[in-house]
Length: 181
Image 1 (tube, rainbow, N blue to C red):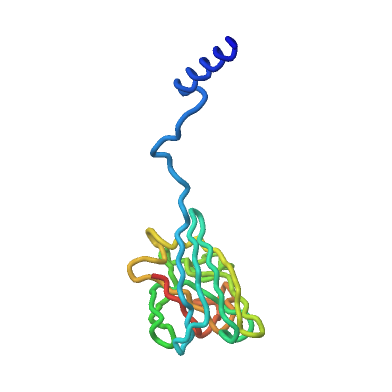
Image 2 (cartoon, rainbow, N blue to C red; image 1 turned 90 degrees about the vertical axis):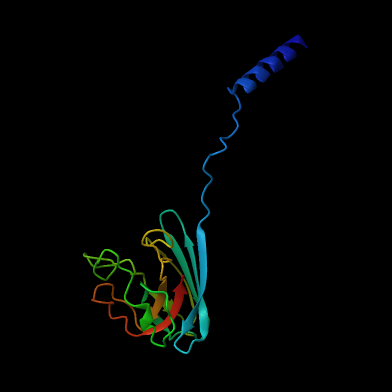
């Protein structure tokens, strides 16, 4: 019994002195929860054809693009982040050019690129539906982020992007748009 009491006393004094147990610091940084964002994707008629969902982590942005059946023509489509969050005109020209703060050349495969708006292509199935997930180093918030003063837009193009040709890789007309604000 004396041994047990001595051991308990020793443990109590070590704990009180902080040798065995320490309380976490009150100002310890908690892991940041990624910021999330969601927006409808609309076609030239203004109909909602899908959804854009973004999760912004410490080193990368992860974006999911879903389009319902009949939403897009089947096949590959270029997608890009454009500089202004405005999808109000049917050709989506109010979204301006690509996000490109450092004036890089267009193209994921271009040695002088890519610009911040460049993204991998997405594929629309035979029924026109899309379920895609892509990542980008372009931030959602903060300096140079997509959610700046005038926002930005995700544009889906009629054709695939060849990732080298200037200015948009031959991706063609803008056929769908999602506002990021």
